[in-house]
Amino acid sequence: MLHFVFENQCRFDSEDALRWFLSMQTSFVREYVDAATGEVIRVPRSWSYEEMDEFDFSSLHSELVDVIIKFFYPTENERWLKNSVNELAFLDGVMSFI
Image (cartoon, rainbow, N blue to C red; front, side):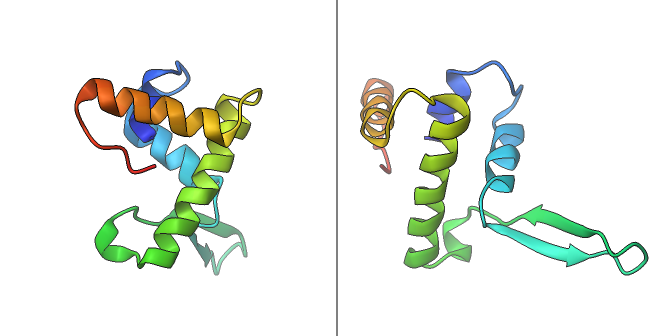
């Protein structure tokens, strides 16, 4: 899904930058408070399978779908996104995780 969005946008110059942006729009961040300023600092959590259970992965996926539609494809819906990602995965010869 990340690869599909990256290939179809011109806002970010790397998949890592896109991943960071998407993560920051979800609840999958760690929040720290700067003791000197009181400012809350948000740091994206890893998307690694080893660091998430099935519930967390499913929740992250759901939030990412919503964020992607909101910021990149506001006139489309989840079904369109899933079909588009699956089509790209089929053309690339890989399995989609959607």
